[in-house]
Image (cartoon, rainbow, N blue to C red; front, side):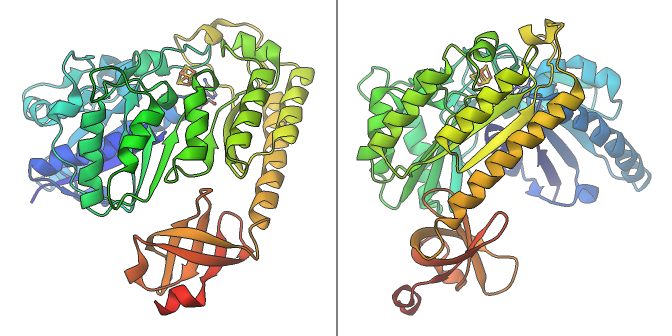
Length: 445
Ligand code: 5AD
Ligand code: SF4
């Protein structure tokens, strides 16, 4: 049997796409492998969001070139595919820079993989079209269902933040229909999924065709999905503050399956920087939004993305970011040093922040956010939380799952409880994990 190795970088949307590429090749008779040396097809599903992410691709391709030559010596063919956002952004340039590559395929064209692989035996091929047909209509059914699965409901972005490549690599916003999403969700649940995270670059701008022929909002979609028997939990990510509509905020109070967690990137606490970033909201608008979300769901866990060292960011601007973080309090967050991306407006600016300053600011912000995360986690010690058990732990007899607030919990328990929600008393916290014990009644059941 032929084997396919898929490595994914970057965001959750890429992780979803990597899974679907494995499904496409699975339908063609390829088995998935984690061992690159034995793969007949190697797919790098790349990320272009920051320079470091994009650079990784070329160093990986250097190693794959050697591997491909070694396999050829041994009489085996290896097809090397570059997929994802670097493929979309750099297209044919990749063929020029990396001689081992056979196929370059963008995020909207990977349903064509079998045809592209076949064609690549006579010439190297590039497919980075934004086709008019919907790739989702051409993808085979999902072959694997984890307890917690991602489901893409929306792709692309119309916001054009000054630092971001997404509107160029993923294109304009497109939403899938409620019916298509429901069908995929039902198939996942039939296969054992108990939690679905709806994903999209701008998921709260979702406006797919509803069952009544008019556009549906994200809360309307979630209400529909919440009706699937066996589906216990719903989440969504990533959102833009300007699309945090009233009915979505209300959904956090009214849809019991919707978990109390919100990832809402703010990027900066300085109005001057937010304006230069073309974020179209200021720090106060963010504060008000958070206050309203907390009114709807007082225990909600908040997460965000931050960029430090955007061109022109002063010490005073950065102090405002620290101030906003102190004021709001996050349970987790992602922090990045600004990295100029070719083709974006911010990359043209000449007032770059020196690397050493960026590093200092990143460290200060991370330290504040780490303190908040540790304090947040410590608050659960001694309490009992509902854990959706996802998989076996690294040590025999242990299992791992997630709390409603998206914290990872490790506990002793049999494999039989995977896929169920169990009450767990938290005993202590580690760096990234909480530890607990199943309550006695649950353990006996
Ligand atoms: N430099 C640094 N961080 C970036 N992000 C997006 N583009 C850049 C860039 N050019 C971050 C933002 C976004 C997250 C997905 O990645 O914080 O929310
Ligand atoms: Fe990029 Fe801004 Fe769109 Fe997010 S909202 S994907 S940061 S352009």
